[in-house]
Length: 329
Image 1: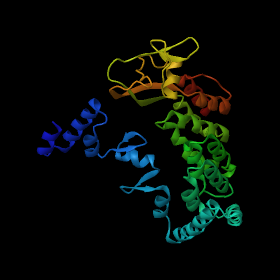
Image 2: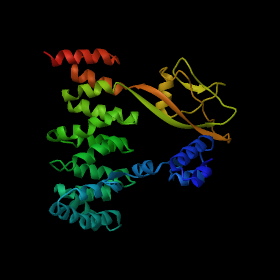
Image 3: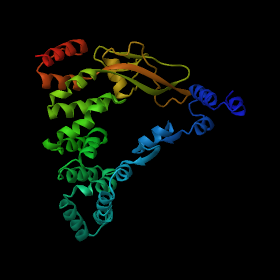
Image 4: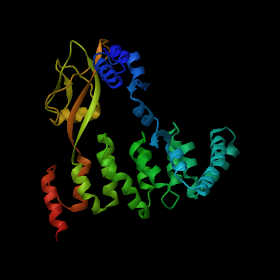
């Protein structure tokens, strides 16, 4: 049917049929290719998802790096000042990565002396995305030495998205008090993130910054709706059970696996319709299904309790009534 749509110049209808085909055969490479999907870390992603996963952002109809977007939006003089740092940071990074002790020490001394905010894009480019968590931690420490707005967004992103817990904590703590208002402009929108984990991290940062103006946004984020795609067997399926101790297992008594967020939903009774689990070491035909669920965000509740001194649990309506009463007094 998709090929018939192609022959009849029905582009949108062809895409619709190809998506339906993927419901039946998720790894159909030809259909994925036609739709512009790409394989990334073992998962098929749409073109937009693939770019986003690699750290790109949209700008005037194109996908560019954060650094490229910032450069495109800046004045010629500011771009020149920031661009001048790239060869320096590149050279110091190469020295630090080498085996010459003298050069390594010199590179570290040079990095430690950097306080110019114009160096932020170069530091983020060469250090911020490094596979070594210690290098990323160095980047965070250097950004924390700088005043003004330029280091704020990179620090916020590190505090939310870095894979290493120590890097995330250091990034949040590196934001100075006089940078809080700008940081909150980046944290608050993340309370609507598709990732429940990111929502919780944003709530913790907002809590630590202690800004009461964020209370309405935290109220809306108390309970959020999410979707997860998981791979399940096409036949001979197993359901999960939740024991008295909250442990999630297979219906036949064996231990199963769920993504941590989904397991949390199951253990707290928030997944009433169950899920199907693919048992390890048992190859079989599989398919991808979508699980939907509402998540009660404990860190959001803790942030509200700390900021307001109140506790209405996850009852959004009671929180809204209380906040409106405070606003009118």
